[in-house]
Length: 391
Image (tube, rainbow, N blue to C red):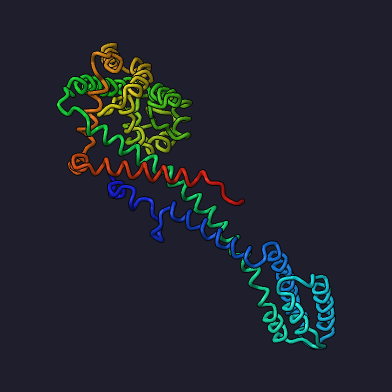
């Protein structure tokens, strides 16, 4: 188990700023409320009107600052356009607009026959009293975006908490396992089957053609518990279509090491075999019985039953009835109520999974404390996420 998991919910849910996702969400909401209150205190809807006027005025100044400065004809033409548009903007503003005087002073700053950059600077300075209204709206919008980001982080943390809680719950379950249970009664039949299928598959590789083995791999696509890696497309095509596919995999691997002159006695194209087989020796060597074995410790009863059911048609294809019988006996273990599969499986998981440190944490109550803390954090996050925020 990772050190992060050991620390539990205290550190796991904090970000780079040291705040948890819940704290970040609550902080963003407070920021929005404060920004919204400042807007109300400054005039409510009137703030938006003043902010819009400020943005229009500054956009006009920025649009003309390069074109309307200078002594040329085009500069003068641009200046006339700017003055006319700015004058119209100010004339249309209501007299009771917040910061109205700032717009009049900005107009005075550019009301001259020739403009320089310093005149534009003075116009911007004149508008400063009205800038605060735009800043109020920008702060509220930034707070709204902060809420969106915090909600996303909180939702992600909630998903993480689900995994961490499940992990602690499983640890508690394992900690309650009967470590004196006769686990050998479960392990011995699984070990016997695994040894039998491994031996049978080795013999199968020696006897079956590569084409037949590849058909087996292709069929496994539809069986999630039989997790065979699929061959590269060019190798699969070669084995399926070339006569060399009738050789066994060990024979193909052996031929790949022959000289071209010697190889011509066995295949129609020595170059083709070397190109397709010699470059895939690692893949071909790796085709074994592992996907057909039962891992130790085994999964829960339902998962084991599914695994046995999916493995059975493959085992029937590569092994004899004695191996199939061993596989069937394992499935019976997971269905026989008198065998107490769940008790033995949990005990096996406990022995295999619990490290000395984890056993110590279970014994002194730290895992239980972590579980309570994580559940509390998730409950508080869920409650916070149920609150509707401004869109």
